[in-house]
Length: 318
Image 1 (tube, rainbow, N blue to C red):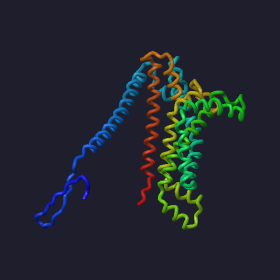
Image 2: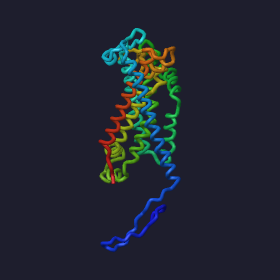
Image 3: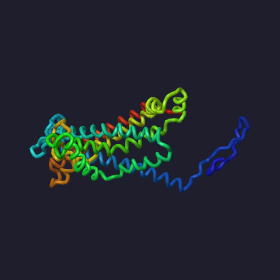
Image 4: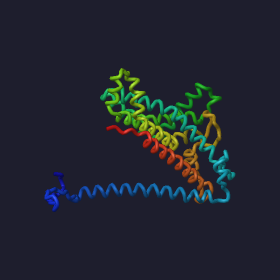
């Protein structure tokens, strides 16, 4: 008989069989917890809606101005608010370049670290190394930014030459950004790999497969949905990162595909402009929210893709 429920004997007229019906008893503690959880979810939803409303309202002031052309915003490669040129592509291009470089670093390192922790490390080693790896995620990003500026950039200038690599460049920012994302991808991927049933591994071993073959041909495909979701979350983290790119990538919009040149990202531009002497309601001020809305749409798209991938490739085991 379940705790917290009252039972009453019920006899059906047709069969004469006596059954027990359970009646839910309200508990004050459970009601308070349920109400707190509901309030937390409601606050989160309304906070998100508030952010969207502010971005949309301020962006409408920007796009509704006679000085801004929507076609120019999405097609031009020049962003110079001082001379009323608002082409978003220099900022988007720099953001995508740093994110791509970051993922080239974070995906292999994070995945291989996850495979080692899940398949090769002993429980004691896993319990020791995983918290140490996740400590990297707790380091302030401003520290990573100065690390990129004072260590990674001089290293690149030593390898490729000071005439090739500028002091501020997207390559150093992307490399250090990848180091920042490694713990996120490794932790999420390791959780997905660890959730694969042990029976699949034992079946693979029983067929004569080695641990390496089992890891890459059985375990990784079985955890593909979680791993892919980790990659997409990592990309979203790279796109939205601020301090590393603000300190190391550059402080001026530049439409270039050379990773050794300075180029300002979307978040870096927002930080630089918002810290200046901008008057409220000006076109320069409103452009910050237009860039923020663009970032929101990009990250939302990535999250939708992540959700689709998880649902489409998820494998359920009995």
